[in-house]
View 1 (cartoon, rainbow, N blue to C red):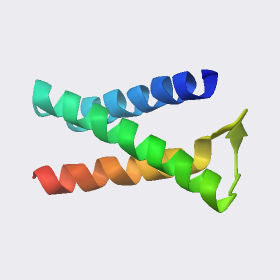
View 2 (view 1 turned 90 degrees about the horizontal axis):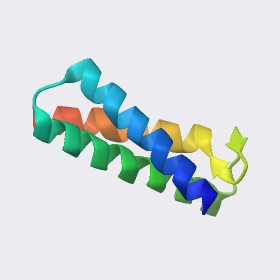
View 3 (view 1 turned 135 degrees about the vertical axis):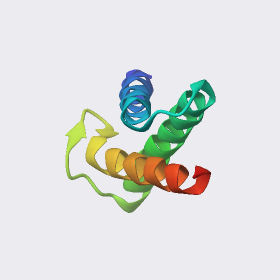
View 4 (view 1 turned 120 degrees about the vertical axis):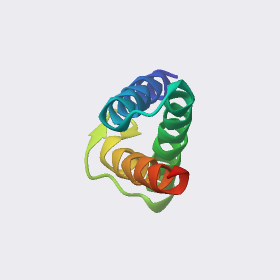
Length: 81
């Protein structure tokens, strides 16, 4: 349970920071937040399935989840342009 809460907090920070960097309205904030959450969760699950573990915080695959979250945010930004 604590792993998912930590992941939620970190992904929310990623979404907020990305929004502050590129902006463009309140709806984009919600969109970036959801994309960051989905990407972070997907990265965590993929790393767990593949057995990767570059940098972990407890059971959270932080490095892989961060990479997928960032890629998702940039892809969403490109898509919404």
